[in-house]
Image (cartoon, one colour):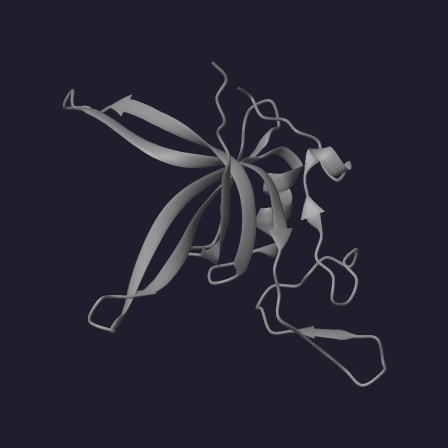
Length: 152
């Protein structure tokens, strides 16, 4: 029987990305993403449900996220679920689900000047110059944008 493991999220970073590099030079970026679902209950009241997710990115994708993203910035993520398991120093077994990033997309609300071709982004971090006005770029190994250097 075949299986399928795919996660798609649109949310905001809950903290600045945490960058590190392995001894072999592989970039690893850990980030937190929050997504909020708003629904109406049977009482007519609006209810919010926020989910906080840990995401791991590797290689060139990790480098790009570490350079251009900051806390509060929106991001569109595609990835897969991974179960991390470990044992505490007290011998207790722990586990948590996280997402291994496979591709991501810059999301921005941009305002444009009146003809001078410069973009004023409301987000606190700059968008790479390779992005054109009113466009977003999917960054993934499949479109030739980045190498995939996932170690497992």
